[in-house]
Length: 309
Image 1 (cartoon, rainbow, N blue to C red):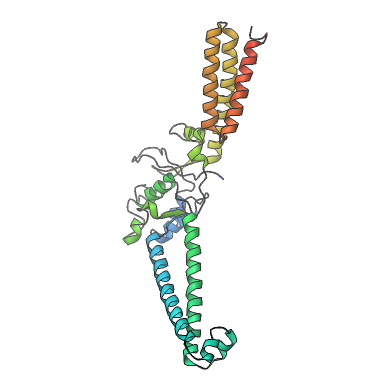
Image 2 (image 1 turned 90 degrees about the vertical axis):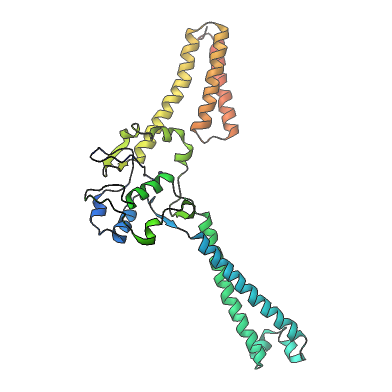
């Protein structure tokens, strides 16, 4: 899954688009009236769905759960009181605590009250469990990528000037601040961990370097970059680093004959190789250790062989 193609850049009037990546074109917004129509179209037109960022209202949700919990506590207390009182009643009343059939067939107003309480508990408990389950799912949702959020703010707040010259926020009222509290925002699209963990992707995505992956300009502040091209460039860079670490060490060891310098070169390249495996891949510790040992063994064999003599 590609990383969300959204980058924020510097705002410059009458300057070429810079440093921002976005997965849709400006004409998508211009076809819709400013306000909720344009905002909805802007979010829906993103091919990576990385702009599907919404409030989760954690405070309201927690309060709602507390209210439901308090309501159930009250119902539980009422039922316990009825149990204690009925257990001290006559034999017919006591039998209603032991037999569901006796309970539902009883014409006693007190047992009718118990049945209504049971139905109330059942419906409230069902609602409580449903809300609890939904809240658990929401808590497992991920926070939006910082650059996705910044780009959505850039466009929504009117900081990005489009082809129609709009400079005002797209939404007004309370909705204008819907993206202010980052801790209360979730994204509907799972974030790809590659951009946060892959240093090569981060390197290729730096300003000017990612211009090689540019696909289209949106406006003076936003441009669309291909994540597929960024990943391809990162893969090529990865191969070049691997080749340099192996061939560079071999070439140096071939031309240098001093044993002390050779040992130093082996140590330096082995450490560099271990760091590259740790930083540029998702290898585990055992895999880093094994690959580093194999790399060092290749260099040692080369030095001790006739080719390195």
